[in-house]
Image (cartoon, rainbow over all chains, first blue to last red; front, side):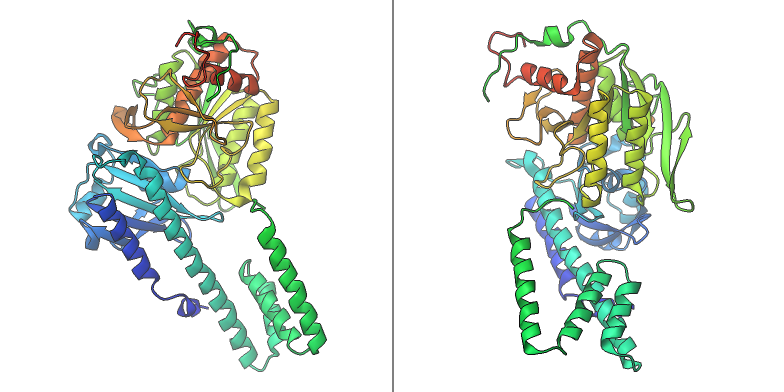
Length: 234
Length: 256
């Protein structure tokens, strides 16, 4: 199962690194970092950083139950603080670890409609730039980009897990369709949906040409319907 | 913005009022009652998700503010409504897992216990919670409880700020806590101070902060003040009054 990441898109780390560096330069900030929630959501891990203290901050872990970054992932609300010295508990530890003591922070959540992923933080941005009052909304757009990239990594990892688990099962002398169906029963969505879909395709491959054409027509109609339908939750 | 003349001005709305007799619940990270800007927290409850029993557990009694944000909100509310009764409903600060359910439970607790106004400077963008929060927003409206929610900064839906029965607030760059802007383009209803404003924080300190989450409690305070003078107003009437006194919608002759 750990082979899932093997099929994920390449270049994600590079993209996220480029994104933090672009944000840092655009906002005239001393540093920009991306921290992601761990699987159990108890901690934030700084995965990507650019600027002051970047090397030290990368890999750093903090509790998701404290600090400005913790507040952002907990509340789902962006926040900016311009005099961090006034926050007696503010990540003094973090500042000591990285050797950089910021005066100001702007932090926005990174989330998809399915879940909270983490937080993007800018330290000491140049707040005297023209239109700097829009920085919070702008950084939120960067956060959306990061969320899209991360969601695609997740999807590919899930697909990879399903495929590898199924191939392993089938290689052990099992019928592919049966292995896929079993996988769809054992996995949680969306992995189970992907496995069920794969099982259906495998079964279709054995049918006649007419049945396959019918299946393609039905799928195409469903796809067109889904595209026309206005997006709405649930 | 088209002007409406309802013969309502700020003096009618809250002149001479102090929020007395109105209970405001701050659903947030806890409130520090020792902060000079807060002074009193009349009731406190902390909720969290218990992983073993998979249930929301609650603890009545004093608690600390884990981030500083709940204290900021309570201080802002206190400024507009010095005599309001403030409850702290802590739903943030423990693990994130189950957060939406804890948030919903805290909100339901405040409604059931008789809060008149609830400040929600938090939100969720998760599709899974659309139905749950829609139901609670309706429960609040039918129980005559005003929900004041911080809106999102991105053009994506966020709950419960998205719903029409709540008062959704974004930050504008004004400083006067008694000046509101009405937004002609929903779902955000009003703009209130929330950019580079001084707010109470942890350990009796203050910080200079920006966010819609600081704009919402300004409106919460004004609603408490309004209700202390006009206790029978429904959430929709409250919204109407706020729109009538908004600086960009008030009738030309009305007092600022």
